[in-house]
Image (cartoon, rainbow, N blue to C red):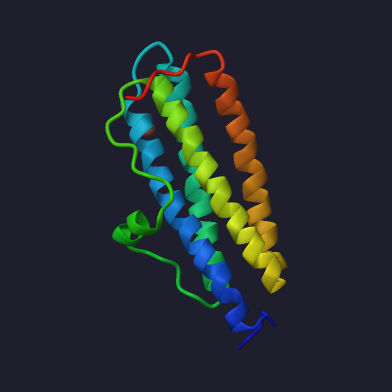
Length: 162
Ligand SMILES: [Fe+2]
């Protein structure tokens, strides 16, 4: 049953953007786990906890994004290889410097914010207020977290490229 009252063709573009956001979130999530595990040094306790808080929020958002795609009567991208292909966020690899970890996280946020804006544009075109409401909340949240990371970095000199 078409309970949405939105033509399927109009949700196609929104779903494409939501799937890209889902892919970005998965790589971002794993980058945060990487940093949570591998962070060392004088900022260990603060950053170990902060990376965990960020990945817990990312995990919640991943589920909400996937279930929004299902609500729109489409299938969420579900394979890791597909996420890696579609993601605008790159895998972090082996990072040793804690400041570099925060800097990479902030860069990941920048890409996710771009993905979220793409979803919002598509949803607005489709008259899809439900998607708009969900992603607008996530956007404000990640913008605020980005401010906090940027504030932290302003007192911890960024290293030159790893
Ligand atoms: Fe842990």
